[in-house]
Image (cartoon, rainbow, N blue to C red):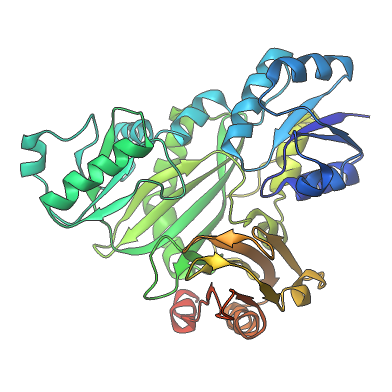
Length: 420
């Protein structure tokens, strides 16, 4: 029996452990947390209380216990440790070290896009901090962001030179990297292109849209859905091959990669950044049902060396899928202490839904942070809107004053306009 070591608990870890066990793989979860604070441990065959940062101890333990593969959820810290540990143990790694570097550095990613001709937003400074000459040439509005942070950390939308100087200081406060990106602010629909890769060949698994509630910050992507039909043809015709060239150029040999892209109001797509791990919005859950491609199975079997020569890439997407996959992320519209969670059990106890809880009762949460994710698959866009409306009526997170803390997505007309 193959043995898989999971480093810690993060988004997706429980699903990974459950899949591995169902596939006949012996599962071990390690971190320094007790079982009640490390959910993946509750489902594992075995638990270790070794910190994921203690690579020396983990290396020795893995050798003693004949571990065949090492895995992690979406935690970038733990994924760094996966790379290090598999390298020491000479085990397969579903993350490519070279590609991982581009996924962690927006500057390097942008350079390789330019090299192969993949579209990126025009920049006024991408190498070092802007000089006075650079700043005099900026055409506002622009986006200022560090090259090495995710989840919009350090990102600022800027309308004048004074704001630009403040934004640069914000970048310096969160990043030690000497580069900062100052690029044209794009206005339009954000989409994701999700690829499977085997032996250096990529295939487009799914093209899907990311949607924010009108009036809320654009980075609070409440709804991610495979409904993006009207843009699919244009993406396949104009950008898909260039993105595949990027994947090959960075020598991303195996696993998955996804690209965040904006379809700007000028009628063109622009690549923003890439990921080389399971996405935090849990879209890999409904994509399994919608596309037939199981991301967890693809990565876990690679990690333990199962049948690597027999992998068959899914056919690259050319047409909209019949089913509609959805990840509904519930964000806070205000910070505070969660004193009551209402209605979430309705979906937790329904096998048609998957619920990932990020924050629980009595947690203190900040404004504009996700507290839970509900994923599901339905027949069409109208049914998806109906389900979202039902969630909006049912699920409530209340603070100490009894106020509802959630952002509810209800821009149904926009969703319906995206479907054929």
